[in-house]
Length: 355
Image 1 (cartoon, one colour):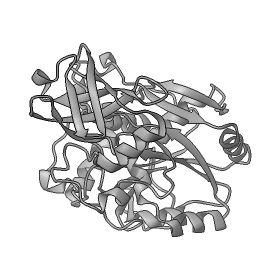
Image 2 (tube, rainbow, N blue to C red):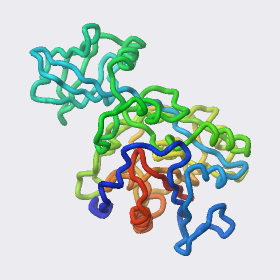
Image 3 (cartoon, one colour):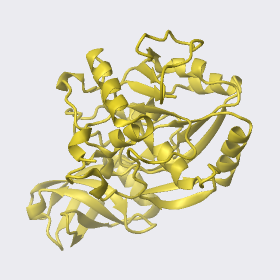
């Protein structure tokens, strides 16, 4: 397929700059094929879809179903410093080169001044050095501290890395709202945005209703924001992201399927972990590592029964994943209807549930 097939237009005014309160964003529900059932908890429109709020997900889930949640936590991954000589620079951490987190691949600007050997100062007790320039322009940066001390410095000097299309300076609320309530494992440079819709009350009610809560981890990389630039979608080099599925979560989710329940992947990140860890029979296995799984139309799904996701950028691998679940024509029709109804888009925006 051509990458241009995944293009669509939208009003810039519908890019959400701030989040709705947790559970109160708008929700569009669409069946993978055909119409939603007549006994669906929300009114079904003649076109076959339904509308509500994200908190209505709890009414849609049935006893015996499962929510697969990505528990990654967003780093304060944007740093502002001074290069020796006085010029101001900005780094966005992308990926650690070492387990101790002392050496990172980073997006850096201004690139022309960040040559190998240059020293960067973020504060008198927090400095770094450029040690390598990668083929696509990223810099490899060695920081002067590692381990817990490094993450302490990030908390002190780093900034929440809002996506580039949210054109404002992060404020004090973003530190809380650009994290899910179940964020535990530090490592992402972007939030798994479907997770942002959950309130503590929603999860508590889901568990009371007999829904299994299973956690997994995928650390979201900056590659999630990169549009596909190849002419053919299949030629795009998919970025890798670190993931983990524990034996306990795999067992719990396998038991849900064995009992006839449905697995609801919360976000494209959770769906990629599940599909990476599932075998051809749909059985999940505990795994960890890096995944480059690239889901698009023609992909054969193995483990995911339903997907909660935000509305994604055109020509992105995320929109391609949605199209891989419901078909490109159906995905574009749903997006067109959401845009017509003035849904708020992208990371801080409204949500879609695919059943």
